[in-house]
Length: 230
Image 1 (cartoon, helix red, strand yellow):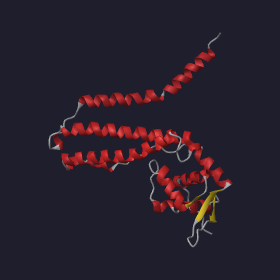
Image 2: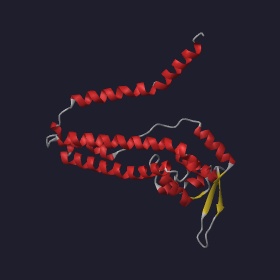
Image 3: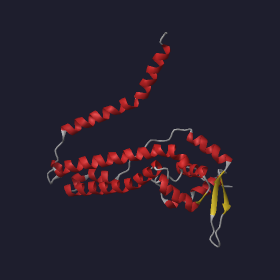
Image 4: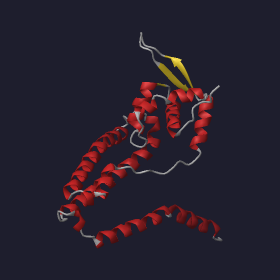
């Protein structure tokens, strides 16, 4: 007998959604598109296979939920599935991976033109405006207590804030880069190196370790107070 298909991070993401409530495959794909797409984009064709994998592993069960003559299967997480999900969640995941075709084209623009760079910056501007429109609507919905899953508002706030900060970063960069490129000569090979901008970049990069050391410093400070004789 052949072994069950190998599970991936996408499989466990679907399992996590099943832990919220039972779904049909179509509903799962819609929910991924609504909630996970911006942090875990996957082809819809792949998503339709994931619930079947979970059933094969005993992590979900499938029941007939047909409406009239329309066949439909609803998936529910099992106790074994909840244990597997808890085990997966206990292991730290991989970090972010940036994939941006517009940046690749800007990076290689010495084989193109200044107009190409500006066109890609404009495309990125349009992209971030479109993405943030959905992001802003979701943020407002939760702030006004009309989010889709109010019981998960605290959890949903964490990735929501990450996405907001990411979109702000992209918007600020597009605004800065457009102003820089507009002043370039027509031949991008003659584009000047901006020393002041490079120095600012170094200063910003140097802030990152200090930001992430704040908690450690706070803990050391608190420990010092605990050990101080009274």
